[in-house]
Length: 125
Image 1 (cartoon, rainbow, N blue to C red):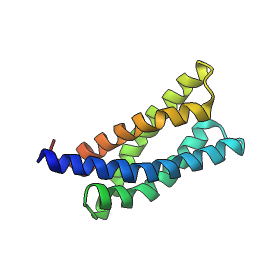
Image 2: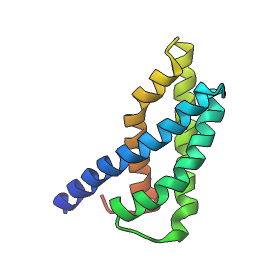
Image 3: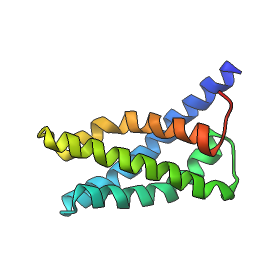
Image 4: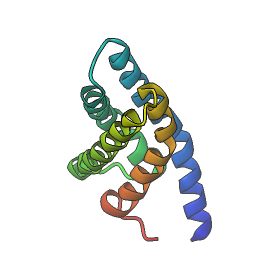
């Protein structure tokens, strides 16, 4: 069983890298276009939900159940709130918003993986 979790986490890293690159690119383009970080995060989250649902479900958790989209979106709503709070805190510290988003990408990806594993795709620990 531990071997299966390791493989799933490895698939998550690969798929997560693609998903993170996509989401960060949307966020960065919106920031560079002059959007407020909360708006940029919201729009990149919405795009991420649509893009990531299939890749995460299919390749990481081996699940193609489209009825899980609402729960998946709920996980991303939680991640959005946590991410915006962390960006707000980073900005208050004077950290460049694009740098903060890049630094936060990996811990936020692990957070979303954990929530997806427990709340959406319900994989036994």
